[in-house]
Length: 352
Image (tube, rainbow, N blue to C red; front, side, top):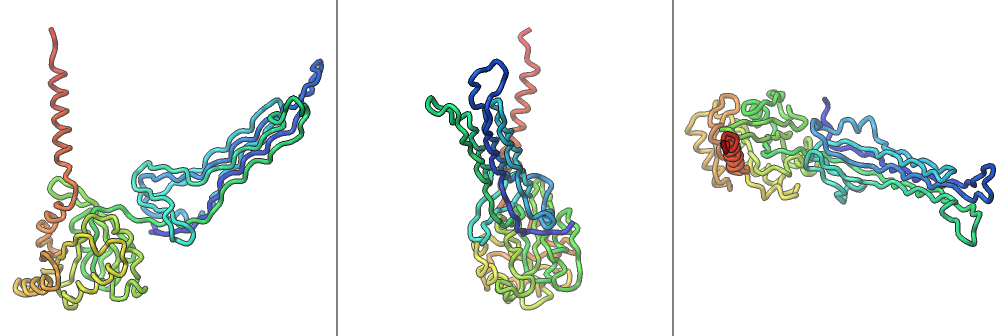
């Protein structure tokens, strides 16, 4: 499945049905009068966040979405049928932006979240509704209100608890394959990862979602390399893991490059808590790792974890630190267990 996180689409809600001009004409019915019914309401455009989608690829092949118009009114005071709403299913984490991308019109963060985005036009009045004591045979009617229309951008921001970032070839794909169920492509060249990857990590009875994004290079905010467009997928993360290749360029410089790109991107990424990890420790000795760790602390890192995505060295300690930033569900699980035990007691009790 191809990954697509941005798409531009055209939306148009249904127009209201026209009202009818009709007169009752039956044998033995004198002065039948007007009996034209009203038109039906046009269909709404509705967005709904559904489970099982993690890309906007469907919108590459379908860019125009138009709801049906309402049914027209008919004689015998029959109102036209209202049109069905057009429901557009989107992945959780999708934002609907204005055409100029300056305004967020809707943000879908939960499964089942549903929002009426464009309202269908109201149906027009039939001539029966214009009948008065002085206007006994009206021929007025309304054509029905037009629907609303607009171009919008869909932008997907993957929902993950933890974000993984670093320079290209820092070992992020190997790391996510080591700690999760992901099957990311691994290669000995820069920009092996071209699109974000998600993996579910299970550690000490806890689960969280880890997002791996393509590597950042100096000038990414200005479009260098792949750019910084994929940073949006870690905006919602609670904590970021910054992997630094111990066998690459100067670790302190590598950390500074990524920090500068986060600051240039904005959106609060520079303020998120980060865990700095020296990766590929299987390729270096302990003394070198300690020296680089001290350099990173001098450059601003609070704590430096020495890990190896290939061998698994030091990963447990890093994951323990990650859990401290995630919500603790232990209390709710304990409470649920207590309720279950109470129900068992109540089931055994009998007045006999």
